[in-house]
Image 1 (cartoon, rainbow, N blue to C red):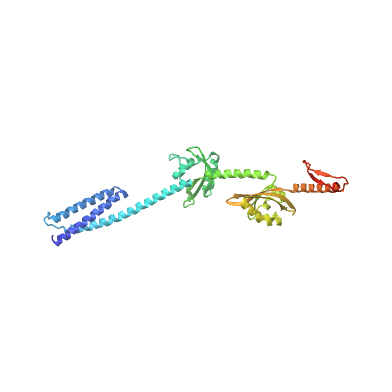
Image 2 (cartoon, rainbow, N blue to C red):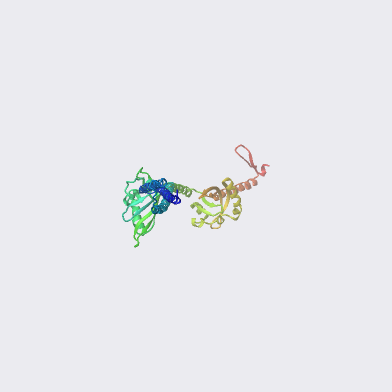
Length: 390
């Protein structure tokens, strides 16, 4: 084969190779784009076959030795341009496919996150009154795709006791005053009739004239939290009722001695109002001697969870008040605090003093008598004798 014939075959071979490669990339783009690439792929493949036939003809001399150099060069240039073009288009569609996959992953992540948080999203068109929402919001409301998604379709899901309240809030406060939507309310799930608590949030989109045209926001199922809060409030209410009706005083304070709460009986015993006590230190109501014992009593409280002792409080008027204190360690908001019941011992101390004075008077009288005086218990055990009996 002559050198010129070799160059001619090389041109045809390169042109054919590029056409086959281009057809391969075009075929790979069928899935990424549309069936139009199937036509391009087939055309390039046929062109490659025809070019392969030309090479064979050139090698065997079946065409009488004719060499179409101009056609060979034009074919090579076109093949190069096609290869570059399809390569670039392939890169574009590969990037687009990656972007679509990333977007799909993001959507799946968002859907999963909404499911975990029981949080749905929506967009309300205020011009048409229609709203679009995520699948999670459909689940929260217990509705399907056929449920009317307009303002009336939302209001019909709201608990009857709050329906007018929510309608007024949305129309007057949110739309009327251009405010954000932020409200806890009850709904009745359409699918099972269950009552649920939700927290709705939304921000308004305004046009150039400041007119609301849309609202975008979220609705979260907060039933578990609300039920817990309601039960906690009921429990605190019952506790407060008991505490305020016991005859003893009651104080809650932290380890530093700061008074956090007290009942009316404690205020009455000390002569203070509740406002004067809450937020102040125990130093205001405990004698200096009692405060010296505070660290040791706190240590016992932390180690055993309770401590009981008799002490002395200082009233607002400066008088000392003998008290019996029963303290327990409890937890509130994740921190340890002390809950103490305080009993006024004034009457008991007076009674004890009266008994001691009565006993003293008895002994003085007995010792002055010339007769023998004996005192025994129920079992006949001798408890006292005067001097005359000795």
